[in-house]
Image (cartoon, rainbow, N blue to C red):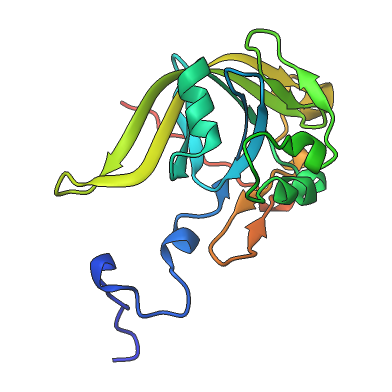
Length: 208
């Protein structure tokens, strides 16, 4: 029937022109992660699976398909930094997605100025209006329901320092829309941002 939902089991494939999973769980904040190796090599890379996981202590995390430099550095040094991707930084972020050797500095590749973190020894994106300094708290290799290891690692970190540009604060409240955050969508080149027109308020009901 025309109105019957499209059903599929991921193990058998989705039978669609493009995998809908990424598009459904979307838009997703971009994990623009800067790290430094034990030998001092700097890395900056975007991850399309990133989010916040806890209030107290504040914890954020990104998921890496493959044991990439960001994971290796976060494990070895115990530190990583998240940099907010804004619309004006989208092209630079895209440049840092190129697969290069570990000794290539993606900051230089994308012509980005390095900022100085206060607590961790990792550079941040100076132009990013929000930066979160993180101490690695857990590294989890993801598993299937059968317990089989996936070649994907979830890196969680406690946020130990937050930098917020003054232009991002309106009467002391962080103005999400004004920063035009870039979020990942489903297809190969799809991204989103938000605007003030899209905002609506929904207050939690009070318990009796």
